[in-house]
Image (cartoon, rainbow, N blue to C red; front, side):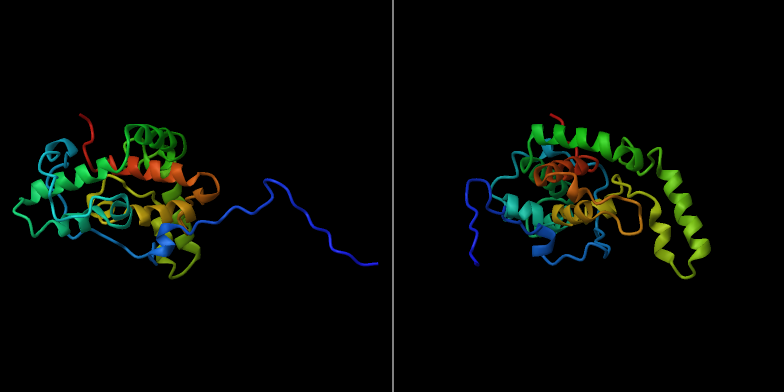
Length: 212
């Protein structure tokens, strides 16, 4: 005798799987995305709150997540703002797309999980940074032509060229997947999506002044 067993009930339906934004945007997260221009001094979100209205730029969450700070800076070139003012506006846009609670949560996540390698101040000089660099140098001695192994050192989040050229979507991909050949774990199986966005918002605070 053959039959069909049907199982039903609450909580048994599979949860929908959301596609990461960096995948939807078809971003190559291994290709450098350096900013072609960086600010002379640290931009402040507080210096542009009044001039950020009525600007020809999308201030939505979708724009923020899919564009780098440099791209936003470049999108403001048609305005009469100086370069310094444009960077202040970018800092304001980035701050307006997060919350104080999210930044605090991101800081806590960073301190507990990232600071040991990337450093408390984001400069890539955490207590494990030297060990990772030495591991990369050792790999070079046994793997001919493996130049990428020298990239063992943690990323310096205080480097404006590197971080201002990276969109939140790009950082999302790096955090989700981890650093190939760098020793950085795949945080996608550890952090929730909300936690990753909070962490990303905090990472940008190494470039922008958010305090009132």
